[in-house]
Image 1 (cartoon, helix red, strand yellow):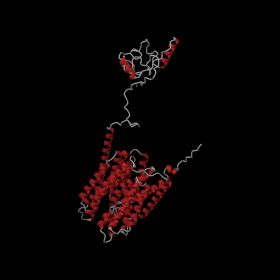
Image 2: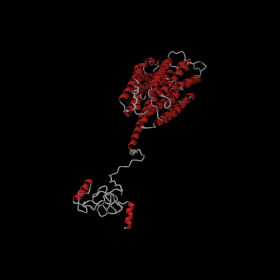
Image 3: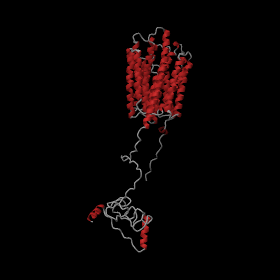
Image 4: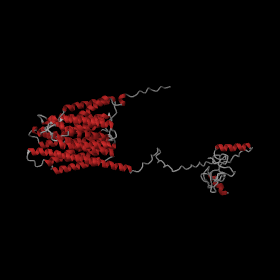
Length: 592
């Protein structure tokens, strides 16, 4: 007898994610997201005085602005590539591109090289955004909340993080390599994560399905169109009116694309577009207005409001993630309304010489974005989340276009420095008003689309019954079950007696079935046209021998009792002849 081999349970590391790797992934998220988003602002104008005489400042400005269009196109591409390349490998690749751009930025000396460095930086940053979202998707719930909180904080503080390394610098190339040390450390953490993932044999991160991959590639189309239009406005010197009109068309296009899919998908897409269009452009303008040269506290006075807003955003995201799993329908609009209140407070407290008061608008913007995004991400899959992230990144460039158009309109015809400052602040106030109305319009649109989806679901036809394994549709249930006719097997010998059993003989004419109406016209209950059945019993329940319905006619026990009575009287029951087939019955009937 062969002894079966002992089945050992799999390693615990293969059954769940070790907490140490979750901590490592959390550190990567905290370091990588700000590193990716800091590539968006174009800060070359701050160091324009350090440019060598032979370089074209306008051309370098356009080349330095290529990072955001490249990031927009890289996000859906990275999400689509995750179906073929593991997420851990893509994370290392994206951070390697960021580190490569930092290293190459120190050697850029022409417009072409600056453009190449910024494109590489944008592609790497887009990969980092999409891949980190996929990496935390099925891990500990706190990690996804941490990702959302850090994403909101990164958008809020991107302009300040981009300006911080430029304080008292001596080279303009610092704009191309703002944080090389952080890039190297983050790349090392990603490499450790990759080695641990391969050594422990952890399952691969979730990936978008085939249908979602098609939507991701579709999201790259408006991103490319908006990128081309933005580059044209910067290089061709467009006026304020066409720039604003282009931005409005871009917002409408993003909302149309966000309307594709189910109600949950639309909620996330609308929320991502609103956060992308409003958060970073608004925070960037507030940061520029609060610089020391314009009477504000400067960057040193803004770090406390940024820190408070970031901590509150992460905490709010964790609370929503852990305790409100099915509240995305009402929490997402509530978070967007908090952002509207934050934009209203910008009009009230900015500019302010005291940086602490800016904690109010910053916290409302960051917490509102974190609550809305976390609640909307609760109800969707990874592919839908990556699709919404792609639209959100395209919304950032659209918001910058709209804000730039408003600034160009307000600063046209400035004659003095004080008028320049006043109109610059006025442009911020107008932008806050426009952004608030835009977010309210998105909330109303999302509510209307959700109501239409609910009404369509209520008016939909009932779902047909499931198809059995055989492939034929299941029969509809009958109103009342009809008695099934007994099989007309003439080879069966009927039981003796005159009852209405299932094996009743055909003694009243050929062609009769066991209990149904045959050639003699008897029905399923054995009654013929005259009201009497095969045993001679009429409608009153009495047969030819005078027995009623309680006589020995109904079941097998009654038949046994009838046979016993005949044997007591000395009469043996006659064996009935073998039944005839329907063909023989019809032949004999015609001959008679």
